Length: 301
Image 1 (cartoon, rainbow, N blue to C red):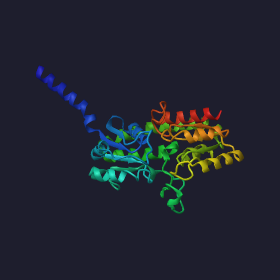
Image 2: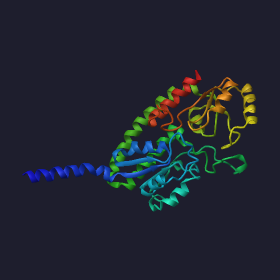
Image 3: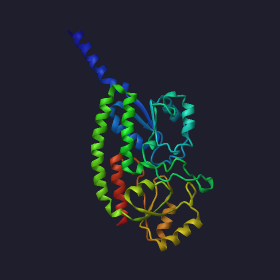
Image 4: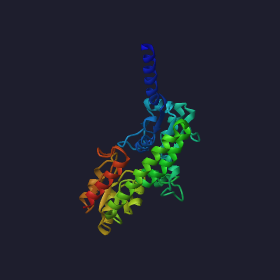
């Protein structure tokens, strides 16, 4: 009897350990996709992010620890659209992982699931860091998060068909909460409609588009080009004719140019979290947009 009880206990403990052993290993290129994968996968996914909110996702080093995570991943979730072009190809090559190469089920490009802004009609490197496939900073529109969630849930089910029903259930639950949150955010954001803003880089376009704001300039003279004295001086003159309310920057961009312009105009500098982890309050996708609106509305008062 004692032996049977021990065997039963061992069996139960073994079955309880299965979720951790069976978890899909997912590497997200950016924190927003790591957070979304966790929402959809729960305990059945083991998720890590290649970058943090304090890093420019254009410029990441392929560190040995990151190569190891790529080598062991079952699924790679990246924005695509050229955002990771400076480091992801090298990472994929050095990983030697055939499961997550482009075109394989283990590779998901979130940018392919959304309508893109700013697709250039011509490419000219003299214009700065221009993305041929369109603006890649898609995560700042919650409607894009919903579009990516649908594709990601289906991909998780393909890679782990044993738990397909679980992924579908979590997706349905997430979307119910997400759609309710979007409705609430749209109501809260009404005062921002038509508000004139300046951004540091062309990385706030989806946020500005979603909120119906009016961008009248950037601190950079061109995408990826550092703010110059001549360009900033011209921007001051522009704001005298077309006053802006807010100056937007990300957590990884230097605040100096924003504060310089704030001192010389009526606009207020503000730093939305940009992605999950960008501020202490933005701990997941829901609080990302809660805190974004709170900061924008607070600065606009």
